[in-house]
Length: 338
Image 1: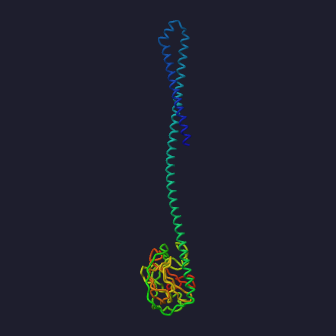
Image 2: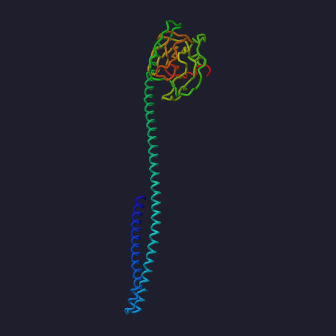
Image 3: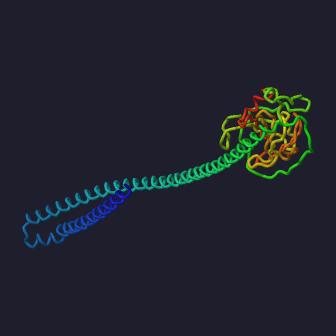
C-alpha cells in the first residue's frame, strides 16, 4: 500500500511540474500577444494607417490578437485550476502516506511488543519444561527410594516371620549421626490433620498390635501433611504420613516390639523400623538421631529416635508408616482422635 502511494506521489509531482511549465508557457505567449496588441494598436498602427494599409485589415488583425489573448488567458486559468486540484490531491496523498507511516510505526511497535511477549512466553515455557524435568528426576529418585524401602520391608518381613519379638526390652541406647540423603519431606503439601496424642510408657499397649487398631497414639506431636493414598506433590502416592514437628523432639514407639532396622536409608534418612509381630511393622524416617539398634526390644511410648530433617528433607518432621505383611496401612485409622 505504501509503495503504491509513493508511485502515485511521484506521478502527481511530475504532472504538477508539467502543468506549471504549461502555465509558464501560456504566460509567455500571452505576454507576447499583449505586446503585439500594444505595438499594433500604438504608433506602429498609426504608421500602418498613414502608410495606406487597409483599415479593415487593421481592424481584423486587432480583433484576432484580442481573441488569441483571451484564449490564452482562459488556458492559463484552466491550467491554474488543474494545478490547484493537483495540489489538493497531492496534499491528500501526502496525508495518506503520513497516516500509513504512522500505522507502520505503530505496527513495528506492536511487533516489538509481540516479540517481547513471545520471548516472555518462551521463558515461561522453558522454566516450566525445566521444572517438569526436575520433577521427573525427583519422581524417578522417589521411585528408586520407595523400591529400596519395599525391598527392605519384604526382607524384614520374611525375617520377622521366623523371629518373633522378645517380651522385654534390653540393651543400651545408640546415637547415630545424621547424614544427608533424598527428601521424604513434603513442604508443598497441605495440612490434613493434627497428631496430638503422643504414645506414653503407661498406655499399657504392649499386647497384640492388631487389637490396638484405632487406639494407638502418635509417635510425635505435630501437623499431618498429605493424606494416605493421595497423590504427592513430587509424584507418587502417600504410603504413610509426614508429621511436621520441632527438631530434636522425641520419637516414641507407637506399640511394643523389636527393632528390625536402624540405619540410614537413601530417601528416608535415619530410619528405624519396629517389628510388632504377626506381620505388623511401624516405620519412622527422617530422624536426627537413632536411640536403638537392630534386635533391641522396645515398649510402647519408649523414645526410639529424635525428630530431624535427614534424607534431604527441607524441614524437620517425622515420616511415619504402618505396614502389615509389607503392605502400607493408613496410619490415621490406627490412631486415636480420628
